[in-house]
Image (cartoon, rainbow, N blue to C red; front, top):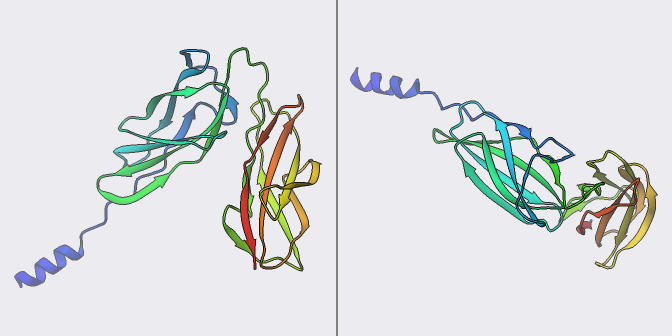
Length: 219
């Protein structure tokens, strides 16, 4: 009887609930951050804030410099964190909710912001976010054709067009200039070949940004 009660007791134990996703608050998504404390011509202090996720006792904040792809991660037990960042630089960030009672973690949405520089009056586009093919992906062409896809954003909301580059080595050539959508269909490729590609985003004031080079393979 005692053994049966012990088995029943263990069988009734419930797993701890997974932490809920945090909701990002500030800096606002896809906008210049104008609330930072200027420390010098090259740096300012920015406060990142979010609302609490349920069943969460700590947060891991990940911030990515979209120009050089440098990433920093910092842990916080509160719903905000202050970081010293480069000015005249675009960033993306997200928050991972954690709980000491659960092995599961939950990631927030990813937001972008632009940290203005000295005398900035217009902002270049955020570097295009590559959707497909992604870095290192192997894809199967359809009739020798593929579709390139990406996502663009701009703090001034004046994105104009994109130049798309591709080649079989890192010295890529332009295959479509001033493309006005965020995809390019019917791109011809060969089987069993490694390709490189990137997207240059352009806004209405002539500012540009580079997605960086992405490699993929065909089979």
